[in-house]
Image (tube, rainbow, N blue to C red; front, side, top):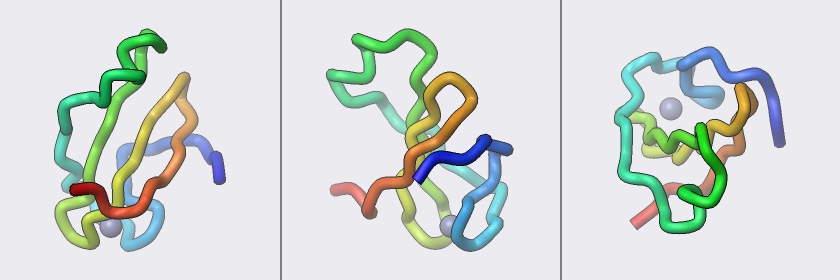
Length: 58
Ligand SMILES: [Zn+2]
């Protein structure tokens, strides 16, 4: 699922997102950012203003 990213968790609307270290493959794509919601643990990969949600990491 891809939508425009607004620095807010798409699931719980929490705006307290934690910036995480990027996975190795994200370095291949400049501008990629990786966040985790501090409330529901959703992973959020932001790419070119769009985001992809991933299952809680770790
Ligand atoms: Zn959330």
